[in-house]
Length: 208
Length: 261
Image 1 (spheres, rainbow over the protein chains, first blue to last red):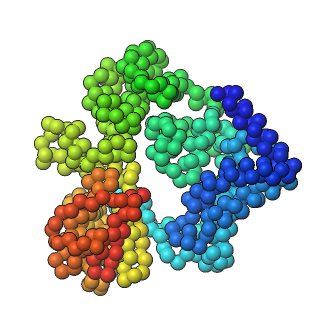
Image 2: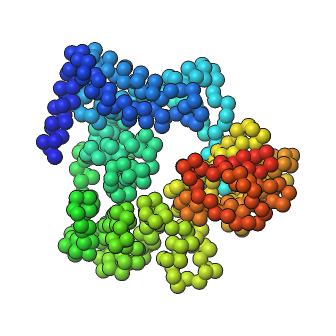
Image 3: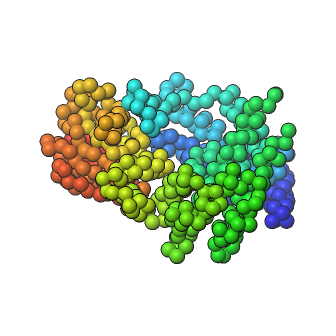
């Protein structure tokens, strides 16, 4: 298992080195590996109706282009495994989608259809249990803070599986879906999520 | 402070080993034997290890989807009590069985599941038990209800059931309101304003029967109800599968789409 992991790391390191040297085949390899999951992530970031205007494939291609260009320019030398590379790419995709969305709605307009959700499901509140969803995008500063916090959390997690659970959860997957994807039990995912929560709480309480 | 060390507890490892036995071995591990071996370990009962193991074992037995492997909650209640499985653990295990079977296995209806789990409870006392399992189903696998009036898209809500749908009554909040009637143990979704008389005040009732099955009863005599383009008469109970494309219900100039999230 360890040997396989080392082999994977070596392959990635070699691939990134070749990208930095401008090897077209290496760029193609990384592109092939991440394209479909990038499209899926971009798609999951789109709100209802936006998919008709924003092309998730375009966002994915643009994000991959940006990543590979930066790697070619010598950035991200500390990236060692696929998980780190993927979390980096996920962030770029997120920003691309936000950029496309801003372009779609223009500088001052917000989507005019008000989305509603029942929140919480069994709360008989004064507004009939339905609350409007805030359509505003997070500010660039809050995105940066969220990114840094996520990076710190990923660094402090005990194993790759916990990191995978966290990233899938952040992509919006429910515990049952994560259990399906990672081929583990529902309780296994819940235990990992509790552990992640413990680490996150400790990090928040730790002195800066 | 090394946070990772704190998480790598003995219990965590013990449970992961059992999970790996399930994932790697061709035959299922024997849970009673495993409990017997580990029972002396520190915190076995306090940390509810038997319950954790039962949750994993039950899930994989149903997920493998082979009839011979399946075990219900009663089996664990019978065999694991001596390892510290309590009544509340059994309750949670039963809720877990309901979720697991709905998601990965035979997808029973609420009524079938309750009849199987509580064979001795008389039918008239099963109503509150049905409501409990329906609530779990709706929390884990919600139905989204989207509707449009006069061709204009209105809104989307997560729909709890049983729920009646209709036009605003005099003392009700304006449309886009979901109200819970405590006394009737049901919900009401106000989809149209008071003045829109092409929609009835009580138009239809929707009840969740299983993960992908809903029961719809048209309640209005004056405004016809069409489900998947077929007219359904007032008071007729019909069951519908929520397929991948959802279910379309029309009444007056209102269209409602139901789909599982």
